[in-house]
Image 1 (tube, rainbow, N blue to C red):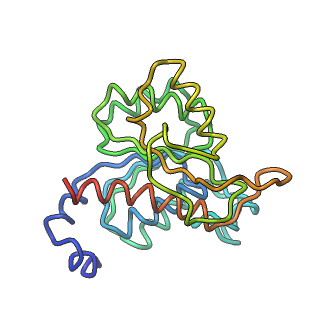
Image 2: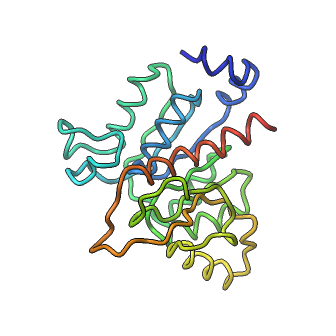
Length: 224
């Protein structure tokens, strides 16, 4: 199934990709797109964590959702979708809410890469802080709501983010705790948030952000 990918990057690079162990935190709008990109680009060892169930409001942006699985656990649907693409994939589901006291246990699994696609600011900060002491490479996705232009998303570092309210909070938290923001890899949008009632979202932005998270990992591996 990876013939087209092998033509692009070669068999040796595909083997490197297949050897990496990935942790995906959250399989919502960003996370489900990340999972899609991981599976279709040769990653075969993935752990996913999410506690939520599919809701009808998820249908506009979350790739694992459809009219027939509303109410089903997201991790269950994520595994089904991944295996429908590559039946041989090794994918582990963790159906739990990620609390701060669970992060150390997760990080002890020696992941090569971690994608943070959750929407809890305290968890995001804790992942950044705790991952400083691990060998895993973390990519953190920041705000994608209230935005409509996927071309303004970029892979950057926390210190270079603009027009991102979530990034602003994280910049303050990391500055207050003397964490070097230049070492915090993120996916963030430079687009000014639109004024909306609640967190309005169009699929273009979270889905593209999820692809960029995987693109960061993909390029890091094949350029190593």
